[in-house]
Image (cartoon, rainbow, N blue to C red):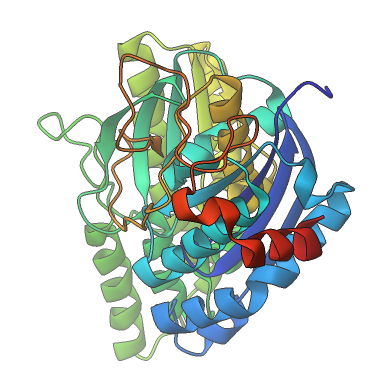
Length: 388
C-alpha cells in the first residue's frame, strides 16, 4: 500500500466543497463543506453564492482532510481537481486552489472530469473497475449512460438527457409539493409511505422509435405538476405520498430499464450507478432486481460517495498517477462543458502516443520547470513555512 500513489482531490463543481485523500484505491479522508442550506431559500443552487462559499471553505476543508488522513501535504504524490463540467465560477475556485497548492508543494497537477470521477469513486468501495464497465450517472445536472473501457482515457457516451436531468425533476416536483430543497431525499422519504402504482405517470422516450439510451424527464415533470394543479383547482387534497411514490417510480423505471438494456446490447456484464440520485433507495432496489434477472453485476457506492465529494476526484487522480497519465499545465482552467470523452486535461505538450507524464511544472520526482521562479527565495520560503 505504501507504494501506491497518495493523492489529494478537490471538488467544487456545484455547491459542495469536497476534499478527499486517497492512497491507491484506499480512502483515507473525505471532508465535505456543503452550502446547501444557503441555497435552500432560493429553491436551487445560486452560482455566485456557491463560489463564495467555496472560497471560505477551501483552506479549512483541505486542512481537515489532511489531518483526518494523517498525512502532511508534503507527502502527497499529486493533486487532482475537477476541471469540469460544472458551474464555471465554482470550478475556478477549486482549480485555482489546486494550482496554488501543487505549485507551492512542487507536486504534479491533474485536472480531471467530474463525470469520470463519479465512475472511478466506486473503486474505493468495490475495488478496481472491470474494463469495460457501463455507468449510469444520475444527478441534478446529469443523466447519462457511459461506457468506460479505461477510466483514465476511454469513456464513451452512450446516452444522455435531452432536457431535464433526473435530479432536476426531483427538485422541481418537491417544490410543487411544497416539500423544500433539495428534492431527492425528501421525495424518497415520502415515497416510502406511498403507492408507486397509484398514478400512471408517463415514461419518457420509451417508445419503439425513441432513442434507446437517451432520457427525457421534462414531460414527466409537467405531467406531475398539472396533475397536482388539477387536484388543487378542484379543491381536493393532494395525496403527497402517492404522488411522490408514483413520480419516483416513473423516473427509476426508465433509468434502470435503459441501463440494463445498454448492458445487454453492448455485451457488458457490469453496471455501475453513481451521482447524487444513486442514493435513492428505490433506484437501488429496482436496479438490483433487474440486474439480477439479467445476469448483470451491479456496483453502487454507499450514499456518501454518490453525491459530489473530493474522494472521487482523488480516486481518479490516483488512477492517473498509477497509469502514468500526463500532468496538466499550469494554465489549466475551468471548463464548464468539459466533455466526458476527456477524463482528464493533459498539458499541451502531451504526445497522445506517449502515456508517460511530462514535467509541466514542479512535479514530484520530475524536477522543476518554473523558469525564472527557480530562484525565487520568497516562493521557497513560503513553501518551507506553509507546507513543510
